[in-house]
Image 1 (cartoon, rainbow, N blue to C red):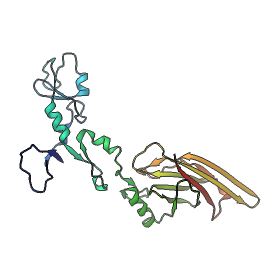
Image 2 (image 1 turned 90 degrees about the horizontal axis):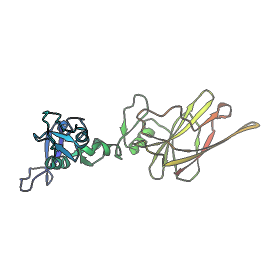
Image 3 (image 1 turned 180 degrees about the horizontal axis):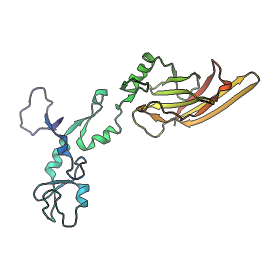
Image 4 (image 1 turned 180 degrees about the vertical axis):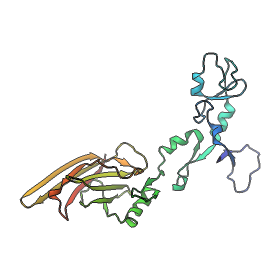
Length: 265
């Protein structure tokens, strides 16, 4: 069952605590699905002479004699059902991310499209046993205050330094965007990776230039890596085995640092 908002007819009295022009009703959302493919009904919607519905996709797949899937009545005449189309379009469904701050309401058949691009979709804490989910702003505070991850602020196009230490470092840009620098101990050294934390996996929007220049006694190690920063919502934890560079163990010291520059792609 779902609580939805539907437009009211003119002249119908308003109820208390209701927005003007709308009313709250309850019914099973399954009635808004095509009875053949079970996808949400969306205009154009067709009906047989008896009144059984089908979506446009299933309508096109009906045999030449247009035999109704429900009553088996054979009719070459199917009509657009404009009345049901109007009802379908008037029904507004709250976004599933309401608890995370989204106030958008969409028609039932558009809810999945909105869900796939909703900016309020949650990201997740990757720490084992921690079930926190929310906005990147909330997670940034959670990472630093609850898990005490080290924190570095930076500006796009400006070189900054970060200490090479096992674990995750929070990187916060001037626009509030959340990045993570992950240093993972590997057999041959420390694997380093950078991620942009955001709700949806989209084409990379940022490029990172990572530089190493380490010296030990009479030898040194230099390395440069330029890469597009992958995005993640951390629902499966911090991605593993996806390193932009690996620092050899023999050159790592307590105060070793890397140099990074992040730019918009």
